[in-house]
Length: 247
Length: 171
Image (tube, rainbow over all chains, first blue to last red; front, side, top):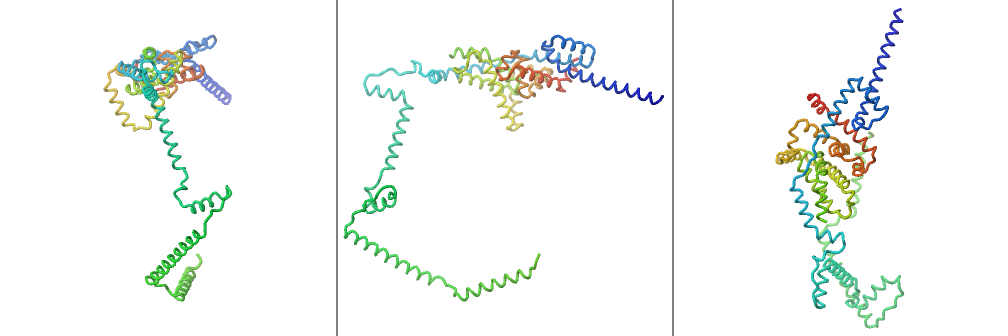
């Protein structure tokens, strides 16, 4: 008997819990429809089911009242307007840039902004340059740049001796174009060789003087002494390693 | 063109300013946003279809508010608070009078705390009474998206504990 009573009580509890959870689910589903209901967009069966549930469920009725009050309060919130100072500022900005905007968007400036035409060729040219000042400045800048580049890139052959020009061109342009041998007479070759010999003699004298100065200022260790010191260093480092032993 | 611009300002100023004021704490900042939006309207005037002026303005306002909030997050909060308090104390406007009402203040605060686009959609639809079509066009969303965001925004408001407490006290 007791077992059957326990089973029945457990069944009742389970049913109650199921009912409770299904009610909660139903309440949740109904509360999701509150906004649609407030917007007047619930129709037919959905509307009837919603109204029927709210009539029976105090929790959902309370939630609907709260939602409705809140919704009405939000609807009652005022629309805000700005002060007239802001409008005055805006109108001033638009008035200032009015002429500029007409040029930008319509392509042609209004007649009032144009200068009256003047007589004479130079006067008309002057007026054209004035009207198209940015274009004129741009053209002048480009022209200056082109002239500067032309000056920098121009060949400077006339400032160097003919032989040097011939040598330089033979090194750099040899692969691109056939080289015509420069014509030197015997006298020019002799003078060049003399200059070369003089230069070699000068370099020899300078190197001898340098060796003398080094010999006087520095003492060079004899070879034997250097070898002995190297051997001492090698034997000392070897002992150190043996003393340390394996890790 | 200037007369038409003036007419456009007169026609739409309330919409722009309302959206900005319910989105930002400082009325001065909101007015700055409104001015910035109308300056942009003037700059882009020839390119804007007159029939779509309102949606263009609301879209630009919405974006300007998002940019402003993003910029403000990078600044020092204490400085920002000080500026806000100073601005609100200096300005005696219609909005400040409303802030004195506790319910309205709580409601306004809760609306400002909503994220975008929930806040913008709620302000546009429930406070300004704009049509779904206008909101769709302004925020470049479809009708179902707007409705979903609106309903979520209202549920978020209802879930605000301070707001619920105020209403419980009233009833």
